[in-house]
Length: 390
Image 1 (cartoon, one colour):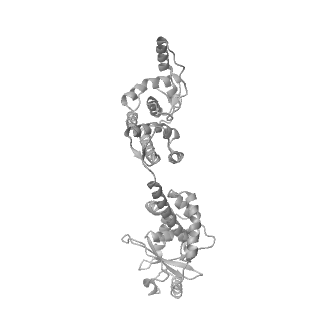
Image 2 (cartoon, one colour):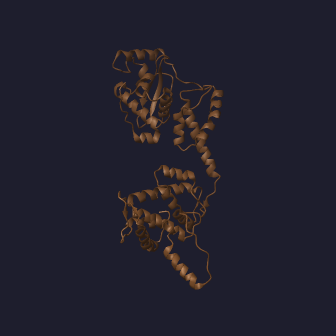
Image 3 (cartoon, helix red, strand yellow):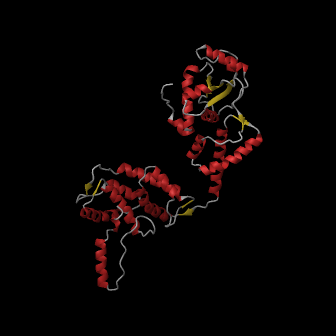
């Protein structure tokens, strides 16, 4: 079979899963030339695998059963053991829930041998098989060595469920259904529903045992939170620089939260989006101009970070002087200035163990007043530790 494209709904993939969206799109292709007057479509396993050669038949069955559970399609068993097939019908939008799979032919199909029109004599032969074998079913008992397909585990992990949690649920699931002796069309779908329910119960229990608490100056985002943000394409240095402003903002408000990591992730995503949309990046690195001034967007970002406007203005001249004397180039002086602001603001408020590290240690204190004044003047004009990490 030649190469071809499958066009599926992005909205359906987001709301019901990628596999379900692809299977639904293929069913719509079959619907275009196989649907009978009552809306039923006769599709065999061979038909499915010819259209979806990159999936196993078990994966296809699981996706179809998920569509049924989600109320998007109806399924009726048909065919025989040598040529397994089903009757499918896409549920109209007015329907509110999926119908259960039944091991019988719907009246619309059984009452008319030509109800399933395929356009050739094969369609009539198939209908004969439908009437001779109305009780064929693909369902079966729980296998002895059952294990969920990789795509089932992948779908669960996309929901944020840890893989070790999924693996721990398998033995109990298998034991329960083996002892019950019941049959099922798709054990993968049943397992998926069971694990999702267990995870919701687990999260509810964990949340109920946690007590909201205010943030402390020692707080740092977890590595998981950092990894999530880095996977979103956010610069690790931007994440690191933003901890200080996050702490300052919430410490001043005294709010209590169960998990500060979630709030931090949301805050950084918002800040990064604002940062990327307002700061222009040049493709050619240049030296900083003598009369350089930060863009208005820098002041906007500073206000969002609760940095005093007067403090921002105070930082401009020493910033320009340092980088002008260093003869270094940059593609965005606005970016460096924003990073410098966050570091300097955190240093002024003396937030321990956050922000950028200071590489220059202060010398020992002197008791002479004249010497102290001179040292203060020298330190004020030679301390460039704020630029070390830029």
